[in-house]
Length: 569
Image (cartoon, rainbow, N blue to C red):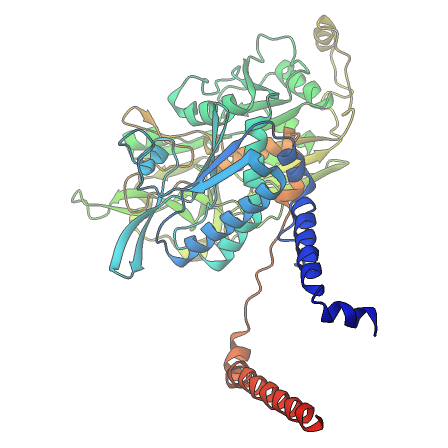
């Protein structure tokens, strides 16, 4: 008798199987692995994300406010968030904890609702009419999360699209989720903040003003060591600054100031320009109901031209724009109409800065052209819709324009660029034109003139100074990207200006290396509706009849083998 038969007869095989199963489970608890069979590695975290999670030295608590009976789109978003945080926990272990909270619940130890707290933080909800079991219901949905680490808290928007969420937008939000969450954890746990200089030498809005509140208090101060820098009075821009930010200057730049910017760029410093080339302000329009837009004379044309860009003296008008209230009939009854001078930009670029971000709003925006510059790569970040136009200056802007519907045939241009990323080895504007006075000025602080960049560099130029400023209502600053005229109305919407700015800064100077996570692209695989309709009956038969036939076949085979076995005995 063989050994196998002996073991079988003595029933020793039963404890052996039990021991084997216990051993497999014990090994599985020690060495956990999974295989991702999706083409785009949907369930595989990027190496930078894993590195950040493995380096956690304390607990990161994630509170997600997507708990409730929501429409299907937001239910799927909640499920995707749960899955992603589960993936994070696989790597971080007990150093990452998360839970889902209803915005209607009270903040612990208070009588304040979580929804009110989120709104106070500038995290505004989507106001939806949802069809639930009990009927139609008005719902406030907060697709956001709060990440807590030690004494610090960072908010994360999980969705930036329109309220009527579609499959495509859900797909985009899922593709960006790893980056958004990992980037927030990196900012929470990274104690070394890059140094950032905010220019104040040419009439830029001051750091302490209401209109820079969101920019300064919610983006720059929490994430960077912020310093104000006056180009007029300082000898040069120190290399300790990683980036120089110039926002809506109104005074001309002198050649000496441009030399300081130029040499900062040549030494590897990053610069972000948010420029209003034309003088066109809503305050003037409110007073006179009309304003003439004219060139500010900032004297930056030669600097931009040398780097490969021209900001034009025109205004972009777009049928895809934000709204303003207009007295249509002159009887004091206002209607919200599209205001073509406030274009709304939806990026089609797959670049890491603009990929999967929501709509970005602008005010009195100029167009941008690129010009020849050796070795410089240009990437358009924001462009107009397919139904846009430009008007040259001086231009008369009247509040009466939108009372009548715009003539669509005039809006026949598409994808007019308004923001551009420049990358490469920039050539100095002052090569072969450096005067003795400028040479002495450089020598005062021990600087040597550089005719070109020491290494590849980056720069961002946006032809709208208002894009990163916030509006003010009743002496209170509104969040960046919020229209004060539609605030509190059915058209209230927070545009993704803040996300655009943060992405620009991250791309220029963030050392996390999370661009790999941001580059993920989930393919949306939809069923072929025609094929489904034509083959519907076949698949119904397969799904219903085949399992029944298999059961019957198995029963017949079992009876046949059983009858054969006992007939032989």
